[in-house]
Amino acid sequence: MFDNLTDRLSGTLKNLKGQGKLTESNIKDALREVRMALLEADVALSVVTDFIEKVKEGALGQKVQASLNPGQALIKLVQAELVSVMGEANEELNLKANPPAIILMAGLQGAGKTTTVAKLGRWLKQTKKKKVGVVSADVYRPAAIKQLETLATDTDLVFFESDVTQKPVDIAVNAIEAAKKQFLDVVIVDTAGRLHVDDDMMGEIKELHAAINPIETLFVVDSMTGQDAANTAKAFDEALPLTGVVLTKADGDARGGAALSIRQITGKPIKFIGVGEKTDALEPFYPDRIASRILDMGDMLSLIEEIEQKADKKKAEKLARKISKGKSFDLNDLKDQLLQMQNMGGMSAMMDKLPGMGSVSQDMKDKVDDKMLARQIAVINSMTLQERKFPDLIKGSRKKRIATGSGQELQDVNRILKQHKMMQKMMKKFSKGNMANMIRGMKGNMRGMRM
Image 1 (cartoon, rainbow, N blue to C red):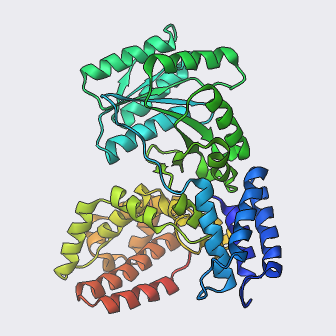
Image 2: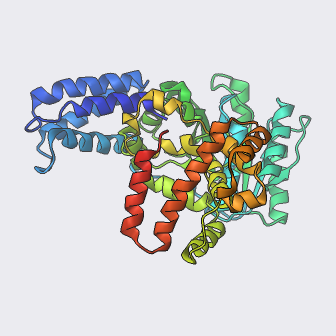
């Protein structure tokens, strides 16, 4: 996410290292590069012009701390302005309504509305502990109704049936009435994709909005359309009172133009960002965290929250108790760790949030293969229960049998055994209660490991 912008900005700001202080001459070239980076990221020209002017004003207005070098000072100013452009802070959904709170989803065809409905429903259910119902008022695409039903079943949401012979208003009103009887907290209404220039379709969604009076009207837009996303959102807002925006497909957006343009052009907050195809790949949009990612500072807060939400705490506690009693870390334990990593979307999903990833070459990033997790789990699954418990038993003929059984090479079996040995050593240091030894061991292991 935002890879191109991160690379350009990181390189530009590093060039200021070694300078004594910020002056008009030494920031001129840097700001020219920042301007080009933003334009290449497809950020709207009006946003770029205003952005550069404010950073320049801050740099020459003696607002920087004396303890910072010029590179650090400009990064601080650029980060603050990125946060300002994207909206200062996350704006939460407003659910303060007599139940059920109604959320209406609008947007162009193919933006990912139906998937986003399921993602948002799941997020509300898991994070806010809400009872959520979903309904499709897309009477032009029968597959959309079926798709939402499937997603609702997968995410354990209440699904209200609808039919292409019904009117969108009737579908939504019936669903809301049914939700009241079931004491649901939230109803999310999916709608058909439409263009803002289609008067008939815009008239239909206006009528739907007036009939159900949603407390939130969210515009779902594909982030890969760049500044066009902001212009489309603005056009929709002129016809429909939008309360916020959901950016989809951000994991495939290497530029970032949409994220940096929408708030300035529309005045509407980005409330959520879609970062993958799975129904758990939706995150609240935090401008300060996104700004840190863009400047290659990482986003450890989001990473920690993700681990807290998706990690199996019971298994983690069980492993901690086992290790504290001096028992050995075996291959079943390693399998559990790999499954948890897989559950969190794999290494590639976490890389965006790690500081300093901009300095890792694209060639190295391309070598991060999340399918490797599945192959490693397959290797362990091909072992007997005794072999998993006592890895030292695995010698020549056993290795060949495991490789054949898992459909992998002998070197893959050796690699997983080596990885287990490294983690076992680290766990032994942990069991002795010597944190300093453990940290030294982790550093040694990291140096020894290769992507």
